[in-house]
Length: 217
View 1 (cartoon, rainbow, N blue to C red):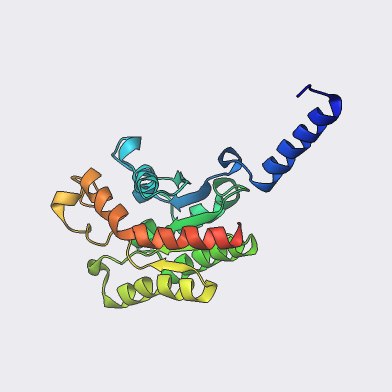
View 2: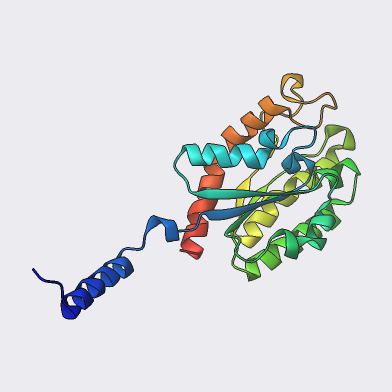
C-alpha cells in the first residue's frame, strides 16, 4: 500500500494514543525513602556497602521493590540535630522517612522530655508535608536507672501513636549486647549485625512503602 501523508498521520496518532494510554516503565520513578538517623544509620566503622541503608535497599530490591534508600545518617546526631537539618536532609520528592534518632540523647543521659519534644517536632513537620514515617525506637541502657529507662523507652511508641506513624520498637533488636554482632565498642553493629537489623525491620519498611504509595501514587 503506497504511503501517503494521511496514512502517516493516522499511524502517528495511533502510536501517540498508545503511549499515553500505557506509560512505559522508564517513566516510573522509584519510591524514595530517607533514612534519617545517627551513626547507626550512617554506618559508623563500616564501608558504605555494609551500611544499613545500602543493605536495606539491596534486600528490598531482591524482593522486587523499585526503591531508593537515602543515607541521611550523621554520626553523633541527637534528635535536636536531626530537627535542625530536617529540611535539607529530607528534600522535596521524599516518599517516606525512617526516623532513627534518640540513641545519642540517651547516651548523654539527656532529659527524655527534651528528646520527645524534638522528635515530636520532626514528626509534626513531616506530617505537614504528608510524608509517612517509620519510627525506629531505641531502649535506654539499664545503668541509667529504672525511672529514666521507663520514660525514655515509652516516648517512641507514644509519639508513633500520636502521629499515626509506623513503629519498629527497637532498632537494635537481636543485635544489642551480642559481641558477635557488634564492633569492638559494643555500641555499633558490624556487618553481620546490620544483616540482622535489615532482616528484622524489613516487614515494617515494606509497610512504609505501601503507605508511601497510597499517599503519593
